Each structure stands twice: as C-alpha cells, then as structure tokens.
Length: 366
Ligand code: SF4
Image 1 (tube, rainbow, N blue to C red):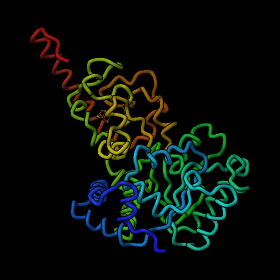
Image 2 (image 1 turned 120 degrees about the vertical axis):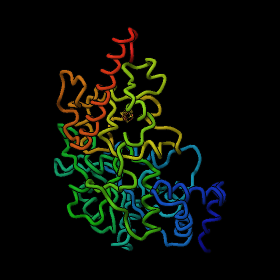
Image 3 (image 1 turned 90 degrees about the vertical axis):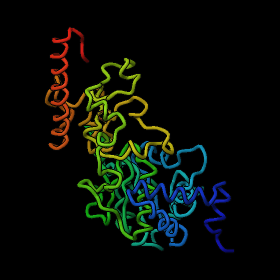
Image 4 (image 1 turned 135 degrees about the horizontal axis):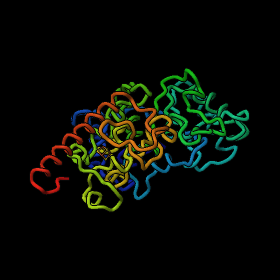
C-alpha cells in the first residue's frame, strides 16, 4: 500500500491546503525570502524526497523538544517534522530500549552520508563520558559516530551549540558543544537559544529542501536569516530606547506602558536572534513583549557572560556602571558596545537638554 500523500496527511491532521500554503508563505517570511518563494517551498515540500532526520538528546532539559512540539494543536510544521521525516527521536518515538537503538543503527547504516542529525543538549566529556550514557555508550561516542556519518549536523539549542548551562563555570561534567566534541564535523549549523525556536528549525530544513544547500552562516555558524540582526534592532520597544524612556523598576508606569527594559538588564543589544519577528507559540508573544528583559540566551557562554540578568549591560558611555563590571558583557562585541554607547550618549544629551529646559521652565522634564 502506498504511503498517504501530503493532502491526505494534512486532512488527517485537520489542516487544509490553505493552511499549508499559508505555512509555506510564513516560512518564506522567516527566511527573509520574497512572497513568491512560498510557491517554490510548497513544491519542494510536496514533491521532493524528504531528508531523513535523526534527533539525538544528550545533557539537556528537553526544552528544545518541547519547543518543537509546542502542544495545543498540530501545525503544519509539526506535520512536516514529526510525521514526514523524523526517523529517530527518543522522546517521541514509540520504540524504546534495544528496539529504539536498533532503529537508530539501521537508519545510520542504510543512509550513511545522507541523513541530517539534530543534536539537543551538551556533550559531557568528563569521567570518560560517564555523565551521560545511552544503551551503554557515552554521549561522546554516540555523537562522534552518528554526526561523523551525517550529511549535516544541526546543534539545536544553546547547550548543543555552545555548551550552554551545563558548560557554565565550573562545568563539573566537562560539558562541551557538538562542534567541540566532534571536531571537523560536516556542515555544522548552530541553532542556539534556550530553547531554539521551532519556526527557525523548521525554516532551516525547509530552506535545505527548497534550495538544495544550507543558508549563509554567521561567525558562530548560525544562519543569518535567524541570527543576522540583534534583538535590539527589531525590538518593538526600540523607539522607547531611542527616546530615553526606560523602565526603572518592576511595575512602574514605564513598565506598564511598555517602555524599554535596558535598565532592568535587557541583553537585547548584545544578542542576535529574530525573536521580535518570529516570536513564540505560533507568534503569540515573546519575553520582551511580556515585559521581561532578554537574557541573551542565544549567545555563547551566556550563563557566564550575561549574568546578573537583572543588571544592565556595563561600560556603556553615559550610564552609571555601578560597582560591578565583571563578568557581564565580557563577550560583547565592540560594535554592539559602540552602538549602545551612541544611544547612551544620545540619552545623556537628551537628559541634559531636558535639565536645561527644566531649568528654564521650572518644570521637570523626564
Ligand atoms: S534594550 Fe531591550 S527592551 Fe530596550 S529596545 Fe533594546 S532589546 Fe528592546
């Protein structure tokens, strides 16, 4: 019996063709492609052989798998990733134990050099890999074996991409990123964030299916379509930053009116990702939209370099740095610091202009 076509699978999931085409258009938008690319994406998803995906899970909290699943109702993205091409995912597959391991070894044996492996979680190398073992093998052995035979490896989430929280000081398990654990792995792509955004993961796979190549990457091997701009560049509160309108304490008037969270510790100026555009939970909202500062989770070593989370980025011209300087912001690029410094200077100029005006008028100018 032939496997059901996409139309039947959509119907079974309660999705219409219109839903599917709208999904393709939204993927084109996430990828920064013109509207017309939606048709090419639809054709690729419908007609091209689906890439075989293997999802490995190591030292992690399963947050990326949760992000992928999202819950609620099945979306087209779930359908594409879960029902069409995902061959192995410990948490999602029905098989368990030796049966599951057999599925993995057969998938790798039959598709060596062709499958794509997605890795979630860091890889602990301490104690000969004893901190994370599956089926009697260490995460390090499994990663080197499975990633070593893959056409491409996608490190999903900051733990896999950069070591994440497990690798934060003092890193008791010797946790490392996939790139460090499997040096020279082919076509490594880092999809950082804690967790990675499911829209971006889906868009990456869709891009590969449509273009037959991987997208351009930044210096940390992250796709430019998702990490090419800072959070600050696209933030809905940016006008308030530029106007010098800052939240000074939780629940104050500025907070209730959606003003900038920079002084409450926002790391948006030092963090690159498309959160303000793609958002989360099918575009419902995102942390800054809910009134919480960005914590910089998509950046390397964020747990060491972006904390304390509720204190503002240091060494910014025009602001009172306070008594702490280290370790926050040690990883900031000169460009970002300079950009923020310019705004800081702008605020001081505005503030001083306000003081002057206040002196002249006798009224306080915020
Ligand atoms: S500092 Fe944070 S809240 Fe303010 S504009 Fe930048 S990203 Fe948005």
